[in-house]
Image (cartoon, rainbow, N blue to C red; front, top):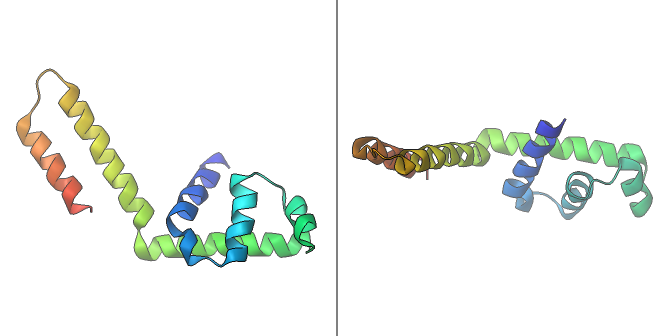
Length: 110
C-alpha cells in the first residue's frame, strides 16, 4: 500500500495541473493529508461513495497521463543515472569514459 501511495503522490505532483479543482482537493486530502474517505465526505457534504469514486477515477486518470506522457518514468530514469554518476565520480579511480556515457544518457532523457 505504501508503494502505491508513494506512486500516486509522485503522479499527483507531476500531473495535478491537469486535474479539476475538486479532484485536486480530494486527492490532496486523501493522499497528502491522510484524511479518510468518510472525513472528506463529511467536510464536503457528499457521500463516502462519491469521494471514493472521485479518488479512484482520478487515480486512473493519473495513471493514464503517465502512460501517455511518461514524466514520472523519465524522472526516475534521470535520478538513477544521476545516482550512478555520483557513485562513479565519488570513487578514487574515476573512469572518464563511463562518466561521459552517463552524462550523455542523462542529456538524452531531458
